Image 1 (cartoon, helix red, strand yellow):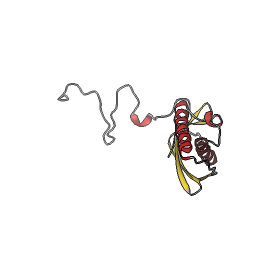
Image 2: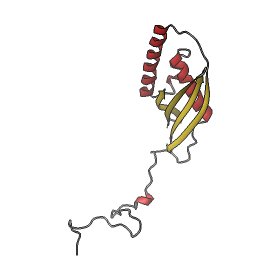
Image 3: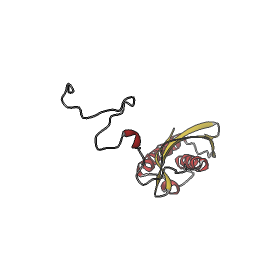
Length: 152
């Protein structure tokens, strides 16, 4: 007796629950990897992640030139950081706040959702304030680069 909707095209081995497509390898043997990337990619050092976060806070503060950080950011991350810098400069002008405080890195947390990508969060301390910096780093041409960066 056939399948209620006609001929059955997928047969699952008993106990696996995974469909088997004739002429294709089983799902268990197929793995999702980034193209041309070895699975043993070392994550970026925590010191690099912390320095990148501190530099982003310094760029927003106006004490570091934006061009020093530009090579480590994607176009969208650079645009977002530049927009935040303009907002902070406007706020400093309105409130006439020209104090300069040195940011210091705190805790660094990372996770690796896939080889060649790292999501990180860093606590940056500026005086008595704590600023959160979240970023997604991706390996491009042998260099780690922030694809997304948010400073809260």
